[in-house]
Image (cartoon, rainbow, N blue to C red; front, top):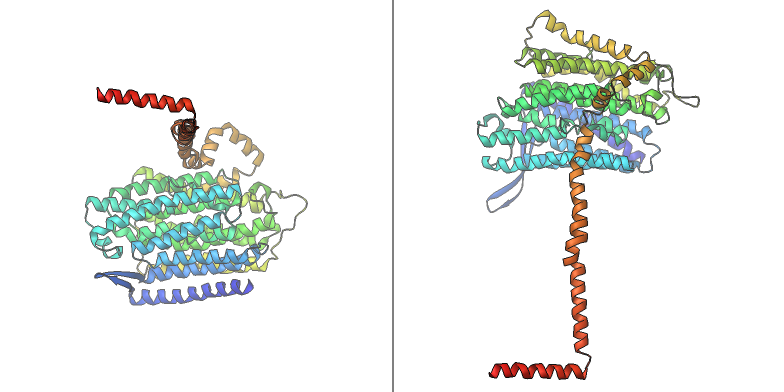
Length: 574
Protein backbone atom coordinates (compact mmCIF):
# COMPACT_ATOMS: atom_id res chain seq x y z
CA UNK A 1 0.00 0.00 0.00
CA UNK A 2 2.79 2.42 0.87
CA UNK A 3 4.56 1.74 -2.42
CA UNK A 4 1.37 2.40 -4.42
CA UNK A 5 0.70 5.55 -2.44
CA UNK A 6 4.20 6.97 -2.96
CA UNK A 7 4.59 5.90 -6.59
CA UNK A 8 1.23 7.37 -7.64
CA UNK A 9 1.97 10.63 -5.84
CA UNK A 10 5.45 10.94 -7.37
CA UNK A 11 4.15 9.98 -10.82
CA UNK A 12 1.52 12.70 -10.74
CA UNK A 13 3.93 15.30 -9.39
CA UNK A 14 6.54 14.53 -12.06
CA UNK A 15 3.79 14.57 -14.72
CA UNK A 16 2.77 18.00 -13.46
CA UNK A 17 6.32 19.31 -13.87
CA UNK A 18 6.63 17.93 -17.41
CA UNK A 19 3.23 19.28 -18.50
CA UNK A 20 3.98 22.72 -17.06
CA UNK A 21 7.29 22.93 -18.94
CA UNK A 22 5.62 21.82 -22.19
CA UNK A 23 2.84 24.37 -21.66
CA UNK A 24 5.39 27.18 -21.26
CA UNK A 25 7.18 25.98 -24.40
CA UNK A 26 3.92 26.05 -26.38
CA UNK A 27 3.09 29.51 -25.04
CA UNK A 28 6.52 30.79 -26.03
CA UNK A 29 6.59 29.26 -29.51
CA UNK A 30 2.88 29.38 -30.33
CA UNK A 31 2.98 25.73 -31.38
CA UNK A 32 0.52 22.92 -30.76
CA UNK A 33 0.56 19.21 -31.59
CA UNK A 34 -2.41 17.47 -33.19
CA UNK A 35 -1.85 13.72 -33.10
CA UNK A 36 -3.89 11.19 -35.09
CA UNK A 37 -3.42 7.49 -34.40
CA UNK A 38 -5.13 5.14 -36.87
CA UNK A 39 -6.54 2.15 -35.03
CA UNK A 40 -7.98 0.25 -38.03
CA UNK A 41 -9.24 0.71 -41.59
CA UNK A 42 -12.41 -1.02 -42.74
CA UNK A 43 -13.73 -0.59 -46.31
CA UNK A 44 -11.84 2.70 -46.81
CA UNK A 45 -13.19 4.04 -43.47
CA UNK A 46 -10.48 4.83 -40.92
CA UNK A 47 -11.04 4.65 -37.17
CA UNK A 48 -8.55 7.09 -35.64
CA UNK A 49 -7.73 8.31 -32.14
CA UNK A 50 -6.99 12.04 -32.04
CA UNK A 51 -5.22 14.10 -29.37
CA UNK A 52 -4.71 17.85 -29.05
CA UNK A 53 -1.64 18.98 -27.14
CA UNK A 54 -1.49 22.77 -26.93
CA UNK A 55 -0.63 25.23 -24.15
CA UNK A 56 -4.16 25.11 -22.74
CA UNK A 57 -4.38 21.32 -22.43
CA UNK A 58 -0.83 21.06 -21.04
CA UNK A 59 -1.44 23.78 -18.46
CA UNK A 60 -4.76 22.32 -17.32
CA UNK A 61 -3.16 18.86 -17.13
CA UNK A 62 -0.33 20.22 -14.99
CA UNK A 63 -2.82 21.76 -12.54
CA UNK A 64 -4.88 18.56 -12.38
CA UNK A 65 -1.77 16.45 -11.72
CA UNK A 66 -0.37 18.86 -9.14
CA UNK A 67 -3.62 19.02 -7.16
CA UNK A 68 -4.08 15.25 -7.48
CA UNK A 69 -0.60 14.57 -6.11
CA UNK A 70 -1.27 16.88 -3.14
CA UNK A 71 -4.64 15.19 -2.55
CA UNK A 72 -3.07 11.73 -2.61
CA UNK A 73 -0.39 12.88 -0.16
CA UNK A 74 -3.13 14.31 2.07
CA UNK A 75 -5.08 11.03 1.84
CA UNK A 76 -2.14 9.11 3.30
CA UNK A 77 -3.17 10.25 6.78
CA UNK A 78 -6.83 11.14 6.27
CA UNK A 79 -7.69 7.66 4.92
CA UNK A 80 -5.11 5.78 7.02
CA UNK A 81 -7.77 3.96 9.03
CA UNK A 82 -9.57 2.71 5.92
CA UNK A 83 -9.32 -1.01 5.17
CA UNK A 84 -9.54 -0.45 1.41
CA UNK A 85 -6.84 2.17 0.94
CA UNK A 86 -5.59 0.54 -2.30
CA UNK A 87 -9.06 0.63 -3.80
CA UNK A 88 -9.35 4.31 -2.93
CA UNK A 89 -5.99 5.07 -4.58
CA UNK A 90 -6.94 3.21 -7.76
CA UNK A 91 -10.27 5.05 -7.94
CA UNK A 92 -8.58 8.44 -7.58
CA UNK A 93 -6.06 7.53 -10.28
CA UNK A 94 -8.89 6.38 -12.58
CA UNK A 95 -10.62 9.70 -11.92
CA UNK A 96 -7.48 11.65 -12.86
CA UNK A 97 -6.96 9.50 -15.97
CA UNK A 98 -10.56 10.16 -17.13
CA UNK A 99 -10.09 13.90 -16.66
CA UNK A 100 -6.78 13.83 -18.52
CA UNK A 101 -8.39 11.97 -21.40
CA UNK A 102 -11.16 14.57 -21.59
CA UNK A 103 -8.65 17.44 -21.59
CA UNK A 104 -6.56 16.20 -24.54
CA UNK A 105 -9.48 15.01 -26.72
CA UNK A 106 -10.58 17.27 -29.59
CA UNK A 107 -13.00 14.58 -30.75
CA UNK A 108 -16.55 14.29 -29.41
CA UNK A 109 -16.49 10.49 -29.44
CA UNK A 110 -13.22 10.22 -27.51
CA UNK A 111 -14.39 13.02 -25.17
CA UNK A 112 -17.33 10.79 -24.30
CA UNK A 113 -14.93 8.18 -22.88
CA UNK A 114 -13.44 10.66 -20.39
CA UNK A 115 -16.86 12.27 -19.83
CA UNK A 116 -18.50 8.96 -18.93
CA UNK A 117 -15.42 7.84 -17.02
CA UNK A 118 -15.76 10.86 -14.75
CA UNK A 119 -19.46 10.11 -14.17
CA UNK A 120 -18.84 6.43 -13.39
CA UNK A 121 -15.88 6.92 -11.05
CA UNK A 122 -17.56 9.86 -9.29
CA UNK A 123 -20.57 7.63 -8.60
CA UNK A 124 -18.33 4.94 -7.12
CA UNK A 125 -16.50 7.52 -4.98
CA UNK A 126 -19.71 9.17 -3.74
CA UNK A 127 -21.01 5.78 -2.50
CA UNK A 128 -17.58 4.91 -1.04
CA UNK A 129 -18.99 5.08 2.51
CA UNK A 130 -21.85 2.64 2.03
CA UNK A 131 -25.04 3.88 3.64
CA UNK A 132 -28.47 5.07 2.54
CA UNK A 133 -27.47 8.74 2.35
CA UNK A 134 -24.47 7.95 0.13
CA UNK A 135 -26.58 5.69 -2.10
CA UNK A 136 -29.17 8.45 -2.63
CA UNK A 137 -26.47 11.07 -3.29
CA UNK A 138 -24.67 8.76 -5.72
CA UNK A 139 -27.85 8.02 -7.65
CA UNK A 140 -28.74 11.72 -7.88
CA UNK A 141 -25.19 12.47 -9.12
CA UNK A 142 -25.21 9.67 -11.69
CA UNK A 143 -28.69 10.38 -13.08
CA UNK A 144 -28.09 14.15 -13.31
CA UNK A 145 -24.91 13.53 -15.28
CA UNK A 146 -26.67 11.03 -17.55
CA UNK A 147 -28.72 13.91 -18.98
CA UNK A 148 -25.47 15.50 -20.15
CA UNK A 149 -24.23 12.18 -21.52
CA UNK A 150 -27.36 11.89 -23.68
CA UNK A 151 -26.80 15.46 -24.91
CA UNK A 152 -23.24 14.55 -25.95
CA UNK A 153 -24.52 11.46 -27.79
CA UNK A 154 -27.07 13.57 -29.68
CA UNK A 155 -24.31 16.09 -30.49
CA UNK A 156 -22.24 13.26 -31.95
CA UNK A 157 -25.13 12.32 -34.25
CA UNK A 158 -25.57 15.97 -35.36
CA UNK A 159 -21.83 16.31 -36.01
CA UNK A 160 -22.20 13.55 -38.60
CA UNK A 161 -23.41 16.25 -41.06
CA UNK A 162 -19.91 17.79 -40.97
CA UNK A 163 -18.21 14.55 -41.98
CA UNK A 164 -16.10 14.23 -38.82
CA UNK A 165 -16.14 14.59 -35.07
CA UNK A 166 -13.01 16.68 -34.48
CA UNK A 167 -14.94 19.75 -33.36
CA UNK A 168 -11.87 22.02 -33.27
CA UNK A 169 -11.95 22.01 -37.09
CA UNK A 170 -15.52 23.30 -37.27
CA UNK A 171 -16.33 25.50 -34.24
CA UNK A 172 -14.97 28.71 -35.78
CA UNK A 173 -16.82 28.24 -39.08
CA UNK A 174 -20.25 27.10 -37.92
CA UNK A 175 -22.94 28.98 -39.82
CA UNK A 176 -26.21 30.14 -38.28
CA UNK A 177 -28.15 27.07 -39.38
CA UNK A 178 -30.83 25.42 -37.30
CA UNK A 179 -28.73 22.30 -36.85
CA UNK A 180 -25.90 24.43 -35.44
CA UNK A 181 -28.24 26.15 -32.98
CA UNK A 182 -29.49 22.75 -31.83
CA UNK A 183 -25.93 21.43 -31.62
CA UNK A 184 -24.73 24.37 -29.52
CA UNK A 185 -27.77 24.04 -27.26
CA UNK A 186 -26.99 20.35 -26.66
CA UNK A 187 -23.34 21.10 -25.86
CA UNK A 188 -24.41 23.84 -23.40
CA UNK A 189 -26.91 21.41 -21.83
CA UNK A 190 -24.16 18.82 -21.37
CA UNK A 191 -21.84 21.41 -19.81
CA UNK A 192 -24.60 22.65 -17.49
CA UNK A 193 -25.23 19.16 -16.11
CA UNK A 194 -21.53 18.54 -15.47
CA UNK A 195 -20.97 21.96 -13.92
CA UNK A 196 -24.26 21.80 -11.94
CA UNK A 197 -25.97 24.93 -13.25
CA UNK A 198 -29.67 25.52 -12.59
CA UNK A 199 -31.75 23.29 -12.86
CA UNK A 200 -29.11 20.57 -12.30
CA UNK A 201 -27.57 22.08 -9.16
CA UNK A 202 -28.87 19.61 -6.59
CA UNK A 203 -26.23 16.92 -7.13
CA UNK A 204 -23.22 19.08 -6.24
CA UNK A 205 -23.86 19.48 -2.47
CA UNK A 206 -25.20 15.89 -2.38
CA UNK A 207 -21.84 14.63 -3.71
CA UNK A 208 -20.28 15.74 -0.39
CA UNK A 209 -21.07 12.22 0.82
CA UNK A 210 -17.72 11.23 -0.75
CA UNK A 211 -14.50 11.28 1.33
CA UNK A 212 -13.10 14.80 1.79
CA UNK A 213 -9.93 14.20 -0.30
CA UNK A 214 -12.22 13.26 -3.20
CA UNK A 215 -14.20 16.47 -2.65
CA UNK A 216 -10.95 18.44 -2.79
CA UNK A 217 -10.20 16.90 -6.17
CA UNK A 218 -13.72 16.93 -7.62
CA UNK A 219 -14.58 20.51 -6.65
CA UNK A 220 -11.33 22.11 -7.69
CA UNK A 221 -10.04 20.84 -11.02
CA UNK A 222 -11.80 17.72 -12.29
CA UNK A 223 -15.48 16.74 -12.50
CA UNK A 224 -17.24 20.09 -12.09
CA UNK A 225 -14.79 21.95 -14.35
CA UNK A 226 -15.26 19.48 -17.22
CA UNK A 227 -18.35 21.34 -18.46
CA UNK A 228 -16.60 24.71 -18.28
CA UNK A 229 -13.59 23.32 -20.18
CA UNK A 230 -15.84 21.85 -22.90
CA UNK A 231 -17.52 25.23 -23.41
CA UNK A 232 -14.12 26.97 -23.50
CA UNK A 233 -13.19 24.71 -26.43
CA UNK A 234 -16.58 25.32 -28.07
CA UNK A 235 -16.69 29.06 -27.31
CA UNK A 236 -16.14 30.34 -30.90
CA UNK A 237 -19.30 28.51 -32.01
CA UNK A 238 -21.46 30.13 -29.32
CA UNK A 239 -21.02 33.74 -30.42
CA UNK A 240 -24.26 35.62 -31.02
CA UNK A 241 -26.66 32.75 -30.32
CA UNK A 242 -29.80 32.76 -28.20
CA UNK A 243 -28.51 29.85 -26.11
CA UNK A 244 -25.60 32.08 -25.05
CA UNK A 245 -28.03 34.59 -23.52
CA UNK A 246 -29.91 31.77 -21.77
CA UNK A 247 -26.60 30.54 -20.34
CA UNK A 248 -25.87 34.03 -18.98
CA UNK A 249 -29.24 34.13 -17.21
CA UNK A 250 -29.01 30.61 -15.74
CA UNK A 251 -25.39 30.94 -14.64
CA UNK A 252 -26.12 34.31 -12.99
CA UNK A 253 -29.05 32.79 -11.10
CA UNK A 254 -26.85 29.83 -10.13
CA UNK A 255 -24.11 31.96 -8.56
CA UNK A 256 -26.72 34.06 -6.73
CA UNK A 257 -28.67 31.02 -5.51
CA UNK A 258 -25.51 29.24 -4.31
CA UNK A 259 -24.21 32.33 -2.51
CA UNK A 260 -27.56 32.87 -0.80
CA UNK A 261 -27.88 29.21 0.19
CA UNK A 262 -24.39 29.09 1.70
CA UNK A 263 -25.39 31.82 4.17
CA UNK A 264 -28.04 29.51 5.65
CA UNK A 265 -26.08 26.25 5.58
CA UNK A 266 -24.39 24.72 8.65
CA UNK A 267 -22.59 21.73 7.11
CA UNK A 268 -18.94 22.73 6.59
CA UNK A 269 -18.45 20.70 3.40
CA UNK A 270 -21.75 21.81 1.89
CA UNK A 271 -20.88 25.47 2.47
CA UNK A 272 -17.68 24.98 0.47
CA UNK A 273 -19.61 22.97 -2.15
CA UNK A 274 -22.07 25.85 -2.58
CA UNK A 275 -19.07 28.16 -2.85
CA UNK A 276 -17.81 25.99 -5.73
CA UNK A 277 -21.24 26.18 -7.34
CA UNK A 278 -21.17 29.97 -7.10
CA UNK A 279 -17.74 30.14 -8.73
CA UNK A 280 -18.84 27.76 -11.50
CA UNK A 281 -21.71 30.14 -12.23
CA UNK A 282 -19.11 32.91 -12.32
CA UNK A 283 -17.06 31.04 -14.96
CA UNK A 284 -20.12 30.14 -17.03
CA UNK A 285 -21.42 33.71 -16.99
CA UNK A 286 -18.19 35.21 -18.33
CA UNK A 287 -18.07 32.41 -20.90
CA UNK A 288 -21.55 33.39 -22.07
CA UNK A 289 -20.28 36.95 -22.58
CA UNK A 290 -17.62 35.60 -24.97
CA UNK A 291 -14.47 35.76 -22.79
CA UNK A 292 -13.26 32.15 -22.79
CA UNK A 293 -9.71 33.14 -21.80
CA UNK A 294 -10.96 34.82 -18.60
CA UNK A 295 -13.05 31.76 -17.77
CA UNK A 296 -9.98 29.53 -18.17
CA UNK A 297 -7.92 31.92 -16.04
CA UNK A 298 -10.46 31.82 -13.20
CA UNK A 299 -10.81 28.05 -13.56
CA UNK A 300 -7.08 27.55 -12.87
CA UNK A 301 -6.84 30.15 -10.09
CA UNK A 302 -9.97 28.79 -8.41
CA UNK A 303 -8.62 25.23 -8.51
CA UNK A 304 -5.66 26.16 -6.31
CA UNK A 305 -7.42 27.87 -3.42
CA UNK A 306 -10.52 25.65 -3.51
CA UNK A 307 -8.42 22.47 -3.17
CA UNK A 308 -6.62 24.16 -0.25
CA UNK A 309 -9.95 25.10 1.35
CA UNK A 310 -11.23 21.52 1.14
CA UNK A 311 -7.99 20.18 2.59
CA UNK A 312 -8.31 22.56 5.54
CA UNK A 313 -11.94 21.46 5.99
CA UNK A 314 -10.81 17.83 5.93
CA UNK A 315 -8.12 18.50 8.52
CA UNK A 316 -10.68 20.25 10.77
CA UNK A 317 -13.28 17.48 10.39
CA UNK A 318 -10.61 14.86 11.07
CA UNK A 319 -9.70 16.59 14.33
CA UNK A 320 -13.11 17.52 15.76
CA UNK A 321 -14.55 14.01 16.21
CA UNK A 322 -15.72 13.87 12.56
CA UNK A 323 -18.31 16.61 13.11
CA UNK A 324 -19.26 18.66 10.04
CA UNK A 325 -21.68 21.07 11.74
CA UNK A 326 -19.91 24.44 12.07
CA UNK A 327 -21.95 25.20 15.23
CA UNK A 328 -20.04 22.38 16.94
CA UNK A 329 -16.69 24.07 16.23
CA UNK A 330 -15.38 27.51 17.14
CA UNK A 331 -12.13 28.92 18.43
CA UNK A 332 -10.06 26.58 16.27
CA UNK A 333 -7.47 29.27 15.70
CA UNK A 334 -6.11 28.60 19.22
CA UNK A 335 -5.79 24.84 18.67
CA UNK A 336 -5.02 24.55 14.94
CA UNK A 337 -3.10 27.72 14.07
CA UNK A 338 -1.43 26.36 10.91
CA UNK A 339 -4.65 24.95 9.44
CA UNK A 340 -6.47 28.14 10.43
CA UNK A 341 -3.84 30.23 8.62
CA UNK A 342 -4.22 28.19 5.42
CA UNK A 343 -8.00 28.28 5.74
CA UNK A 344 -8.02 32.05 6.11
CA UNK A 345 -5.65 32.33 3.16
CA UNK A 346 -7.92 30.27 0.92
CA UNK A 347 -11.00 32.14 2.17
CA UNK A 348 -9.42 35.50 1.38
CA UNK A 349 -8.38 34.26 -2.07
CA UNK A 350 -11.96 33.09 -2.64
CA UNK A 351 -13.30 36.52 -1.69
CA UNK A 352 -10.94 38.19 -4.16
CA UNK A 353 -8.87 40.15 -1.62
CA UNK A 354 -6.27 42.15 -3.58
CA UNK A 355 -3.06 40.42 -4.67
CA UNK A 356 -4.14 36.87 -3.83
CA UNK A 357 -4.91 34.32 -6.56
CA UNK A 358 -8.64 34.95 -6.72
CA UNK A 359 -8.27 38.71 -7.03
CA UNK A 360 -6.58 38.72 -10.43
CA UNK A 361 -9.28 36.60 -12.09
CA UNK A 362 -12.40 37.75 -10.20
CA UNK A 363 -11.63 41.45 -10.40
CA UNK A 364 -10.90 41.27 -14.13
CA UNK A 365 -14.07 39.24 -14.77
CA UNK A 366 -16.20 41.75 -12.84
CA UNK A 367 -14.66 44.73 -14.62
CA UNK A 368 -15.08 43.15 -18.07
CA UNK A 369 -18.67 42.17 -17.21
CA UNK A 370 -19.47 45.71 -16.01
CA UNK A 371 -18.05 47.07 -19.29
CA UNK A 372 -20.14 44.65 -21.38
CA UNK A 373 -23.64 45.29 -22.71
CA UNK A 374 -25.46 43.35 -20.01
CA UNK A 375 -28.83 44.35 -18.60
CA UNK A 376 -29.52 45.60 -15.09
CA UNK A 377 -30.69 42.18 -13.86
CA UNK A 378 -27.39 40.48 -14.79
CA UNK A 379 -25.45 43.39 -13.31
CA UNK A 380 -27.31 43.05 -9.99
CA UNK A 381 -26.72 39.29 -9.96
CA UNK A 382 -22.96 39.87 -10.35
CA UNK A 383 -22.87 42.46 -7.57
CA UNK A 384 -25.04 40.44 -5.16
CA UNK A 385 -23.15 37.20 -5.78
CA UNK A 386 -19.84 38.96 -5.07
CA UNK A 387 -21.14 40.39 -1.80
CA UNK A 388 -22.71 37.07 -0.73
CA UNK A 389 -19.39 35.29 -1.32
CA UNK A 390 -17.66 37.49 1.25
CA UNK A 391 -20.71 37.27 3.53
CA UNK A 392 -20.76 33.47 3.85
CA UNK A 393 -16.96 33.39 4.04
CA UNK A 394 -16.90 35.70 7.06
CA UNK A 395 -19.76 33.69 8.60
CA UNK A 396 -17.69 30.54 8.16
CA UNK A 397 -14.64 32.21 9.71
CA UNK A 398 -16.70 33.32 12.72
CA UNK A 399 -18.30 29.95 13.38
CA UNK A 400 -15.17 27.80 12.90
CA UNK A 401 -12.08 29.87 13.62
CA UNK A 402 -12.85 32.86 15.82
CA UNK A 403 -16.12 32.20 17.67
CA UNK A 404 -16.71 30.49 20.98
CA UNK A 405 -15.31 27.00 21.46
CA UNK A 406 -18.27 24.58 21.30
CA UNK A 407 -16.72 21.15 20.94
CA UNK A 408 -17.08 19.89 24.51
CA UNK A 409 -14.66 18.64 27.13
CA UNK A 410 -13.16 15.55 25.51
CA UNK A 411 -11.20 16.76 22.53
CA UNK A 412 -7.76 16.42 21.01
CA UNK A 413 -7.29 19.08 18.36
CA UNK A 414 -3.90 19.93 16.96
CA UNK A 415 -1.85 20.43 13.81
CA UNK A 416 0.45 17.51 14.55
CA UNK A 417 -0.57 15.56 11.42
CA UNK A 418 2.36 16.54 9.18
CA UNK A 419 1.12 14.41 6.30
CA UNK A 420 -2.07 16.46 6.21
CA UNK A 421 -0.48 19.88 6.69
CA UNK A 422 2.53 19.45 4.35
CA UNK A 423 0.55 19.42 1.05
CA UNK A 424 -1.24 22.57 2.17
CA UNK A 425 2.03 24.46 1.76
CA UNK A 426 2.23 23.86 -1.99
CA UNK A 427 -1.37 24.89 -2.54
CA UNK A 428 -0.90 27.84 -0.16
CA UNK A 429 1.95 29.14 -2.34
CA UNK A 430 -0.34 28.71 -5.35
CA UNK A 431 -3.13 30.63 -3.58
CA UNK A 432 -0.71 33.55 -3.02
CA UNK A 433 1.33 33.66 -6.23
CA UNK A 434 -0.78 31.60 -8.65
CA UNK A 435 -3.03 34.43 -9.82
CA UNK A 436 -0.22 36.86 -10.62
CA UNK A 437 1.88 34.18 -12.35
CA UNK A 438 -1.04 33.00 -14.50
CA UNK A 439 -1.94 36.59 -15.39
CA UNK A 440 1.60 37.18 -16.69
CA UNK A 441 1.59 33.92 -18.66
CA UNK A 442 -1.91 33.89 -20.16
CA UNK A 443 -2.28 37.64 -20.81
CA UNK A 444 0.97 39.07 -22.16
CA UNK A 445 -1.08 42.06 -23.33
CA UNK A 446 -3.41 43.36 -20.60
CA UNK A 447 -7.11 44.08 -21.08
CA UNK A 448 -8.06 47.70 -21.67
CA UNK A 449 -10.31 48.60 -18.71
CA UNK A 450 -12.13 51.92 -19.05
CA UNK A 451 -14.81 52.71 -16.47
CA UNK A 452 -15.82 55.31 -13.91
CA UNK A 453 -14.23 55.37 -10.42
CA UNK A 454 -17.51 54.15 -8.87
CA UNK A 455 -17.64 51.04 -11.05
CA UNK A 456 -13.91 50.49 -10.51
CA UNK A 457 -14.41 50.52 -6.74
CA UNK A 458 -17.78 48.73 -6.81
CA UNK A 459 -16.31 45.25 -6.30
CA UNK A 460 -14.36 46.36 -3.20
CA UNK A 461 -17.40 48.25 -1.85
CA UNK A 462 -19.70 45.23 -2.25
CA UNK A 463 -17.06 42.95 -0.70
CA UNK A 464 -16.68 45.24 2.31
CA UNK A 465 -20.44 45.44 2.90
CA UNK A 466 -20.82 41.66 2.51
CA UNK A 467 -17.96 40.95 4.92
CA UNK A 468 -19.35 43.29 7.57
CA UNK A 469 -22.83 41.76 7.30
CA UNK A 470 -21.51 38.20 7.35
CA UNK A 471 -19.54 38.78 10.56
CA UNK A 472 -21.84 41.13 12.44
CA UNK A 473 -25.07 39.16 11.87
CA UNK A 474 -23.46 36.14 13.47
CA UNK A 475 -21.83 37.83 16.48
CA UNK A 476 -24.94 37.26 18.59
CA UNK A 477 -25.73 33.76 17.40
CA UNK A 478 -28.75 33.09 19.62
CA UNK A 479 -30.59 36.24 18.59
CA UNK A 480 -29.68 35.63 14.97
CA UNK A 481 -31.23 32.15 15.11
CA UNK A 482 -34.38 33.42 16.82
CA UNK A 483 -34.73 36.28 14.35
CA UNK A 484 -34.47 33.81 11.50
CA UNK A 485 -37.67 32.16 12.76
CA UNK A 486 -39.55 35.37 11.96
CA UNK A 487 -38.62 34.90 8.29
CA UNK A 488 -38.93 31.12 8.38
CA UNK A 489 -40.28 30.74 4.83
CA UNK A 490 -37.45 32.81 3.34
CA UNK A 491 -34.80 30.95 5.38
CA UNK A 492 -36.15 27.55 4.33
CA UNK A 493 -36.49 28.62 0.69
CA UNK A 494 -32.95 30.05 0.53
CA UNK A 495 -31.29 27.36 2.63
CA UNK A 496 -32.74 24.56 0.51
CA UNK A 497 -31.28 25.89 -2.75
CA UNK A 498 -34.73 27.12 -3.89
CA UNK A 499 -36.14 23.59 -3.32
CA UNK A 500 -33.80 22.27 -6.02
CA UNK A 501 -33.05 18.93 -4.26
CA UNK A 502 -36.80 18.39 -3.76
CA UNK A 503 -37.56 19.23 -7.40
CA UNK A 504 -34.75 16.99 -8.66
CA UNK A 505 -35.74 13.92 -6.66
CA UNK A 506 -39.20 13.60 -5.14
CA UNK A 507 -40.92 15.93 -7.62
CA UNK A 508 -39.69 13.94 -10.63
CA UNK A 509 -40.08 10.46 -9.18
CA UNK A 510 -43.45 11.00 -7.40
CA UNK A 511 -45.69 10.69 -10.49
CA UNK A 512 -43.73 7.75 -11.88
CA UNK A 513 -43.83 5.90 -8.54
CA UNK A 514 -47.56 6.58 -8.16
CA UNK A 515 -48.18 5.41 -11.72
CA UNK A 516 -46.09 2.31 -11.15
CA UNK A 517 -47.98 1.50 -7.96
CA UNK A 518 -51.35 1.85 -9.73
CA UNK A 519 -50.18 -0.25 -12.66
CA UNK A 520 -48.94 -2.94 -10.27
CA UNK A 521 -52.31 -3.08 -8.49
CA UNK A 522 -54.59 -2.79 -11.53
CA UNK A 523 -52.39 -4.34 -14.19
CA UNK A 524 -49.68 -6.55 -12.80
CA UNK A 525 -51.73 -7.91 -9.89
CA UNK A 526 -55.13 -7.28 -11.57
CA UNK A 527 -56.26 -7.70 -15.15
CA UNK A 528 -52.93 -8.92 -16.52
CA UNK A 529 -52.85 -11.52 -13.77
CA UNK A 530 -56.48 -12.49 -14.43
CA UNK A 531 -55.95 -12.86 -18.16
CA UNK A 532 -52.27 -13.71 -17.87
CA UNK A 533 -50.47 -16.20 -15.66
CA UNK A 534 -53.20 -17.14 -13.18
CA UNK A 535 -55.98 -16.99 -15.78
CA UNK A 536 -54.13 -19.27 -18.21
CA UNK A 537 -53.26 -21.63 -15.36
CA UNK A 538 -56.93 -21.84 -14.28
CA UNK A 539 -58.10 -22.46 -17.86
CA UNK A 540 -55.53 -25.19 -18.43
CA UNK A 541 -56.43 -26.86 -15.13
CA UNK A 542 -60.16 -26.86 -16.04
CA UNK A 543 -59.39 -28.25 -19.48
CA UNK A 544 -57.15 -30.88 -17.94
CA UNK A 545 -59.92 -31.94 -15.53
CA UNK A 546 -62.40 -32.20 -18.41
CA UNK A 547 -60.01 -34.33 -20.46
CA UNK A 548 -59.31 -36.50 -17.44
CA UNK A 549 -63.07 -36.99 -16.98
CA UNK A 550 -63.41 -38.03 -20.63
CA UNK A 551 -60.50 -40.47 -20.34
CA UNK A 552 -61.85 -42.34 -17.29
CA UNK A 553 -63.34 -45.26 -19.48
CA UNK A 554 -66.86 -44.56 -18.22
CA UNK A 555 -69.61 -46.64 -20.07
CA UNK A 556 -72.07 -43.74 -19.94
CA UNK A 557 -69.61 -41.48 -21.72
CA UNK A 558 -69.00 -44.12 -24.44
CA UNK A 559 -72.74 -44.57 -25.02
CA UNK A 560 -73.32 -40.79 -25.03
CA UNK A 561 -70.52 -40.23 -27.52
CA UNK A 562 -71.86 -43.09 -29.75
CA UNK A 563 -75.34 -41.50 -29.67
CA UNK A 564 -73.85 -38.10 -30.65
CA UNK A 565 -72.00 -39.64 -33.62
CA UNK A 566 -75.20 -41.33 -34.82
CA UNK A 567 -77.13 -38.04 -34.64
CA UNK A 568 -74.34 -36.22 -36.54
CA UNK A 569 -74.31 -38.89 -39.30
CA UNK A 570 -78.06 -38.71 -39.64
CA UNK A 571 -77.92 -34.94 -40.16
CA UNK A 572 -75.13 -35.37 -42.73
CA UNK A 573 -77.16 -37.96 -44.73
CA UNK A 574 -80.25 -35.77 -44.68
